[in-house]
Length: 116
Image (cartoon, rainbow, N blue to C red; front, side):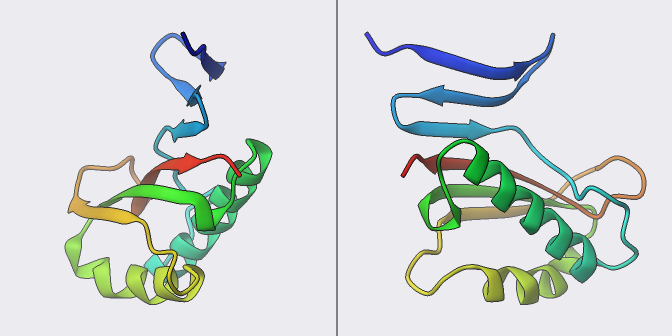
């Protein structure tokens, strides 16, 4: 039976859970509260790239992305950054919904990725 590994586990959640060669990342926000959706998206995607690398993956191994926006009117701005970030032919399965997010943050993203 394959072992389930929990990284940076807290009382409610682990930052990352690993099962076989799959990585399940909790939702993340940008490291700062940048004023525009484009800036927050760019900062968050850079943060996620680092996390993916730390756990043996990269953006081209993302299987699924769940994107939560404070306001759906920000979807075009977020997509303008996302579309430049994703390499052609590597777009993951994705959902994008409106959600209540902590004050000052415009989006949150949770990922599922395969290890390289």
